[in-house]
Image (tube, rainbow, N blue to C red; front, side):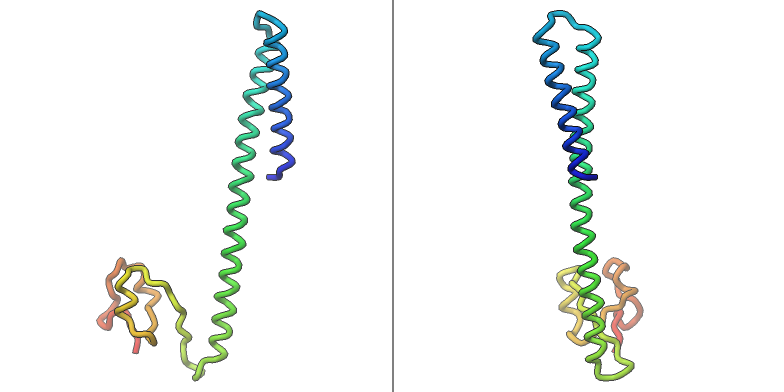
Length: 134
């Protein structure tokens, strides 16, 4: 949605409102033209509001999409750079995750990895070793 369509709808709405005001001030009884002007004014005003809201939502979605793409590029680059700095060929590079609960970060030593399977279990640890590999 572009500003062009929103502006066009706004111009049409203003024209209908001016026409309606001119018709009301000019005549004392309601005619079919008054009803047409009122219908056009209300309809084009609603269309302008809906188009403006849609344009704002699309802009916010585009900003979020750009931030997500930037984050994915950063993650990919960091993983690539960290893999090149790994000491051994079989070593898995740990990815820093933010703690979901306040206490989970304190339970894990700095060098351990968090299990990808244990995240969705609602705080329960997977397996007998608490979801940690040594």
